[in-house]
Image 1 (cartoon, rainbow, N blue to C red):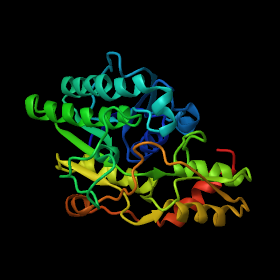
Image 2 (cartoon, rainbow, N blue to C red):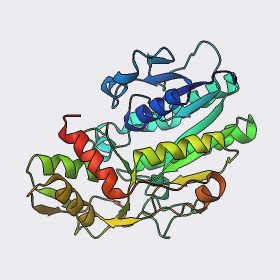
Image 3 (cartoon, rainbow, N blue to C red):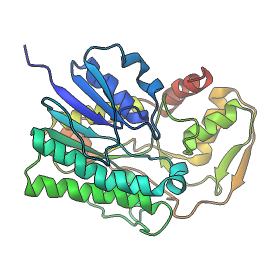
Length: 313
């Protein structure tokens, strides 16, 4: 029988981190979940709190990380990621991308653990190529409002590769494209939770711009499967994990109205600064090296997400 593996998930009480913790526990891991609850919630990990192979540590990863005992894997998911946070807490976003990644990599080095960085499609900025391959360097405004998140993740990728090359840490970089599902914050500020909350409350759905800009949306279960496969693989280059099927923002709004049964109308507001007009992953690398591609149709994922929001989740 293989020995039990032990993993640390930073940001483990957040939307994505909590789903990852549940998957790892289900895979037989001993899991250390670390979060300072700035944007995470203990409600997201409530189902794990009685699990003997699960441990929660309240800690800010921008301060030195101490973990007793061995670690086999470090998943660095800590980071506020909602547009609503970019103006609200810009300095903590920059700090967790820079200092938090530095501390997490230092821990991986000390424990001889494999390290996975949860990066983002935001490293591509408002892309000038379509779809986006991992070789694309991006089109980012470093001094714009979104720059605090974009550049924090770009720096995180740089320091991850520096530790890989200089300290020989076994690293993985995953670029996450728009992901949705149960456990998203109601005040997240992104398209899908905004639309669902407004539809369920009978309020007009807010469309920024004319709604023609496109998004590729993937259900959280597909993202977690991609995460797990990447960590188990030998791939050290960045890998896009996203759904290449594009929907216009207006299409997504109409889907949610239909699923929720809401009679809300749509209202248009000006497009925010540096908001990407088109974002779509090229997932050739994920298909080739991980045998991964998303399985959940947008409608099926949205139905499950609307149910969760409607149930008071």
